[in-house]
Image 1 (cartoon, one colour):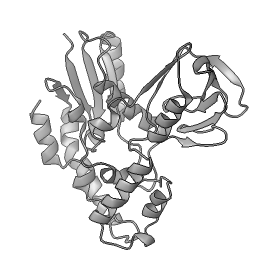
Image 2 (cartoon, rainbow, N blue to C red):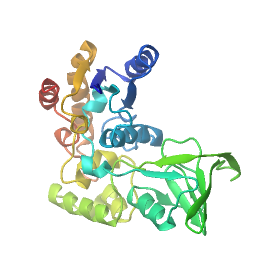
Image 3 (cartoon, one colour):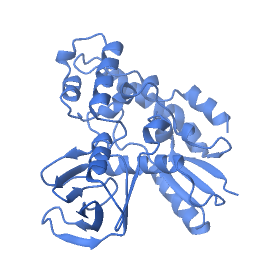
Length: 302
């Protein structure tokens, strides 16, 4: 039957090796890889857009109906990734948009989806997470893709769907279909920004006028490293375990088990060294990450 297996690797190298081994020895098993962000804890730099899409993709797939219900599925992750809190399930429920040539599509639906899920409107599309609308043409750079995509509509039917070169704006290959994912791990529409500001004031007792991060968000700009304020976008964050079916089987490497305290210590070290900057208050490690005892309790349940 369709058994779900969670495999926790020590690091990204081991994750990649295990994933390749599974692909070779058990090609029928569906593999979902959930990597950690590629930045240091509390960094002022946001994770790479490709990493973000590689994280959002498995989360949305875990929430959707399984394409092959009787097939085994393995979720591969690392200690660092599983220690991070993630958005609640409702943030990614129904948060994908399927687009295919010959189907009907209202341009307003696409625009609403893109704005709600963190895409930014621009004149010409150059970077992942950007989109532009010109009459019956919608250009967008989907997360997880190497090239942007141009949707040409005739009335409200998709006439053509092709990738294009952002430098020359010339069309490349035609596409049959496209699965659109959110552009970020947090919502960034007006409602989300208002909620962020409210929670900031509840959480921090400081002069928000002296905090560039707060000022950027208030102006609708996502500052680098905003991901470490993730809990201010939601009433409650979740963990990867919340996305897994209850009967999942757990496999954790000995080196990964030993690495839990090391990763937690590194997070706390960063918090101590960066936490005294009054212009950038930080959320405590336990708010953004899972403390080791909470993680061990979650591991025990499987």
